[in-house]
Image (cartoon, rainbow, N blue to C red; front, side, top):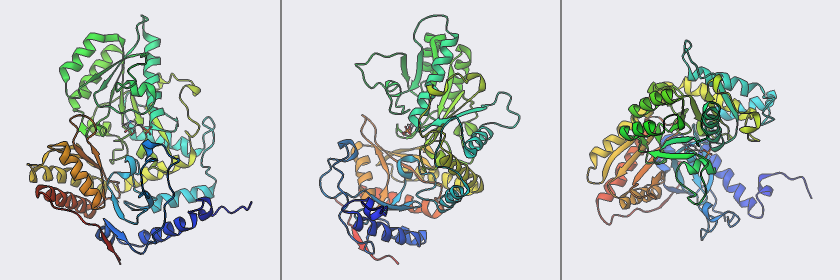
Length: 474
Ligand SMILES: Cc1ncc(COP(=O)(O)O)c(C=O)c1O
């Protein structure tokens, strides 16, 4: 037994070839100007040696474990670009799974992390003896959430949780605990949420979207259409003080990027105050993707609970959180905790990332405006194919007129090296989604819009085909 911890050895029998391909891919991506990279998107990069990827039969079917043939998964990434195992170059237009705020291995964030480690910041420790970055992140988030003269500030933040699911569960528990303390009846609390919500993958959060129909519900979960003001009003009138909480995501990235109207949030705010319920905004998708950090700051609606995740630590390592007010500080330490919450190094990366957002606010805003107006322009340009553009800023969707066209557009973009997502698996859903990382500038935005334009044009011409190319890009 040797102590060889080299990548080639750790990756097993295929390790030597795999590590060599990674190294070649990393070098190829690192030295190149984005304009050159854009020219190579969709092509096979011959400078990266071909190799046999590690098979993934060990993974469950839901993670591709049963896919036949050699895989074409992620080989190596840099910024907004990545190479697949079959050596194809992609522009990642969804920031991984919506969490890689600055793309892959952003050099400044990486440098900040390495420097912090050298200075004594640990990767992780224990949640009730937090290291300096976590405490500072708490202060920084509170600062971002409030004006200096805010009369009723969100002045506490739970950072002891690892993933968005655990943070959402903590927010839900807070709503229920506050309800338990004030209720005079033994009736189960009611949780109102929006149709098409996604607040995570534990049972309670999945009850909120109607899953596990055979299991008894500990609360009454009621789903409402985001724009149905009358129905929301009727639900508050009907359940009154039995309502423990109202949930919304400002941009519903799990429902075709539709926007929750400001009027809905304002109505929910008024009613929550009247019946003593807590308004929770799940900003796991929207948070950190704008200079104000939180969507609620720009929308002007002040929630009682704000859930943070994904982009907060720029995908460095899972770290999530819940912002709230001191009077709602009702959970005990072990009510809401995960082993890797309160982690010092991700907190440091989150601080560095917030600094970058502040420093690059102009570019971030310009890109957001460019994507948003560009998607609307595409919808106008192709009225026979596209129903409308939806979303806000970097979080945009193109809703096609048919499911088949949505799937075909997604396939075509993929064949062209443009990584997007498609919502076409629920009845009526037919939207191609993007969430570019904040590194995107006007060049990248125009490039993406142009590739979508070309794909839509090709879809308008029946029987046109795409071909794969091999290239030596300088
Ligand atoms: C709006 C929203 N809430 C909660 C979650 C759950 O977060 P996580 O996957 O980190 O558990 C997600 C994840 O996609 C999300 O998009």
